[in-house]
Amino acid sequence: MRVFCTYFDKRYLSRGLAMYYSLQQHSLNSKLWILCLDAETNQYLTPLALPNVEIVSIEELEGDCPPLRDTKKNRSLLEYYFTCTPSLPLFILNRNQQIDLITYLDADLFFFSDVEPLFNEIGGHSIAIIPHCFPTAFRKAERHGIFNVGWVSFRRDDEGLNCLRLWQSQCIEWCADQSDENRFADQQYLDDWPARFRNLVVLHNKGANLAPWNIANYRISKRNGRLFVDDAPLLFFHFHGLRQLNGYVFDTCLQHYGAKLTPTVREEIYLPYVRKINALAKESGSAFHAPLARNNLPHPSSLGRTFDMLKRLLQRHYLLVLRLCLL
Image (cartoon, rainbow, N blue to C red; front, side, top):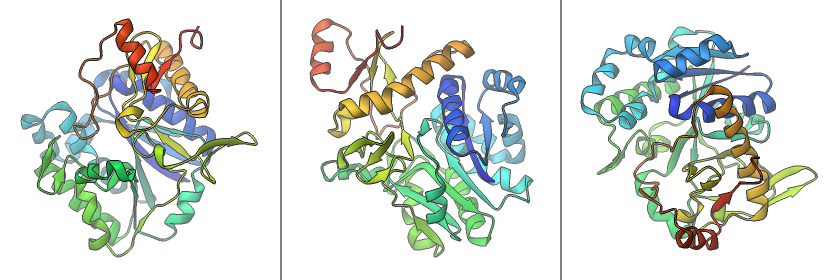
C-alpha cells in the first residue's frame, strides 16, 4: 500500500477532498493521512469515515512536538502551517512502525493517472523531491526554492529519518513567508538536500507536478482519452493560486508565469477540477476560498471586477468563465 499525508483547514476543505477522491480513483492501493488544521475540518471529516483515510488532529501533532506548538506565538497562520509540514510525516512514521515509505502531498493537487511511475523512479531511494521546472524566463523564481514541497517522499531508514528530523528542526527554528539569505518558508531548505543526502532522487517525470509555473514548458494534448505532457502521461496537476473572482469567474494564476489557458488545458484540466471543487463545497457547506498564498508565487491583492478589467484579463487567456458550465 502507498502511504500519503496532507493537511488543510476549512479554507481548503473542498480542495483537500478533491485531492483525496482523485487519488482514490487512480491509486486504488493507497492510504491518506489528513492533518486537520482546525476544529471545523476535524468535525466535518471524522464522521465521514472516508475509506483509506486516517485523521490527525492539530492537538495530536502539537502534543507530540511541543516546540511546534510554541511557534504559534510568533508566526502568521500561513507560516505556522508551513512549519507543520515536516512534523506530519515524522509523526506518522514514529507512530506506525509498519510504514516503510511516506509521501507528503500539498492539498491542492489533483490526480489524473496512477502515480506508480513515480514510485518506480523512487525505487530504493530514501528521499524523493521534485523540481519546480520554471521556464527560462522565470528562472529567477528559484531564489525561493529549486524544489517544490508539493510532493516529498521519505523512507523509514537512517537517511530518510535524519532528513525529516533536520527539516523539522529547521522549520521550527525559522519558517517565515519571506526570503532570508538561503531560506524561504518550508521550501528552500530542500535545495541542499541533493548534496547532503546521497540516497536521494530528484523526480523528473514531466507528468508529475504540472503547474501554472511550469506548464509553459510543455505541449499539453489529449490522445486516446488520456492527457499528455509532451509525451508523458499527466499524473497530477498542482492547482496553485486558483482564485474565484466571483460566482463564475476564476483566476488560474497562469498569467504570472507567461502561460495561456489553451482549450485543452481549460476543458480537460481546469474545468473538471473546478466542477469537482464546487460540488464538494456545496456538499460540505464550505466555500471556494481564496488560497493563503506564498509570497514568491503572487496573487493580485485586488482584482477589479469592472467590465474593462475583465475584458483585459480575458484577452490574456488566463481566466476561466464558467457561468454555463456550472449551471
